[in-house]
Image 1 (cartoon, rainbow, N blue to C red):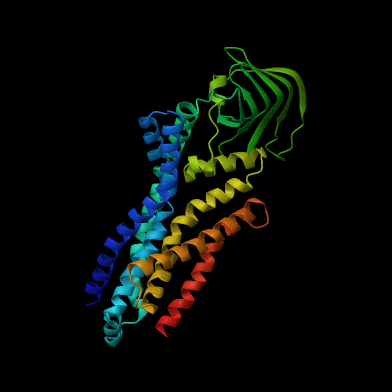
Image 2: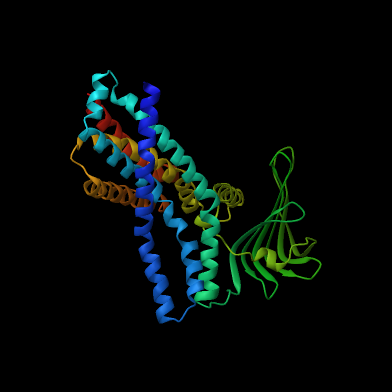
Amino acid sequence: MIKILDKYIFKSLIGPFFFGFFLFVTIIAIDPMINALQYVVNENTSFTVMLRWFFNRLPQDMIFTFPMSVLLANLLVFGQMSRGSETTAMRAGGINFYRILVPVLAFAIIVTVISFIFNETVVPGSNRRAKRIKRQEIMKLIDPETTENSILRTSDGAFAYARKVYEKRGKMERVLFEYYNKEGVLTKRISASDAEYKETHWLLKNVIEQEYSEKDGIADPVSIPEMILPITEKPSDFARETKRPTEMSYSELKARIEAYERSQFMDTTEMRVGLAMKTSLPFASIFFAIIGASFGLTNSRSGAFIGFGVSIGIIFFYYVLMSFFSALGKSGYMPPMLSAWMQNIIFAFVGIHIVRKVNG
């Protein structure tokens, strides 16, 4: 009986989930769609170009619709079950609300996994393509002469950093090369105020070289006016377009943060908040599922329109909290991980409280 009940609840959630998903995607697509049409009408931009930009722009907003759809699906399904006295029959059969939540949580976990995979494999690439289309084909912008905060793994195994890269001029400013052994211990560091590409090598100027002792890890800085660094990387390699956190996968962003922190190249607080958000947002589906199921049972009169209105209110409150705490994290007032997960923690406590109230 329990297995039949699990299948029944699980299957009941699928239809309303897809209904909510397409509904919310349609709503969030209105703004970029209007933006695209304005470029077509006012700027005479090709409709095909705007269509490509629109479909590449959409996935970054679609990631928000997964937890929203889970919430709406649970509100509708359990509201219907409550109106039909199905939950009353379940309780009369000795099934408590905690047991009823098992298929709900299973459904939410599957959505969480799908959401994380979507955010990892689809969103970063689509964001990069949308950015490139808008810059090059819509706004007709010329690529900037400089690239800032460049990071690269060179052919000789070093982690290379450059504050500014002038690709056309073949020059870089404030460069740093770090060499690590197999155990990840820093063995040598080369910093220079300027670097100039000479076809077969880089000429470093105002160099400070430090070789670290294996015994005590201490290095004696050596100043060198000029140094030849025979690496194969060209200015174009260093001038690769800097990616935003939303244009990188979890592993790419994590590696970028670790590289920056290892060299103390720049503050990574904002990037760490973005990294934590890549996990906190998909997991919101679990907490939305619990609240949606509980709230649906306590509001037996909630039809589709009422359920949609309630879900909008809950979603609005969640994203207000998310914006508030992420801003605190990026400003350094909260630890990055806590700031990204704080709204989930609050919703978890609220969900637990509602579940206890319903079950009691």
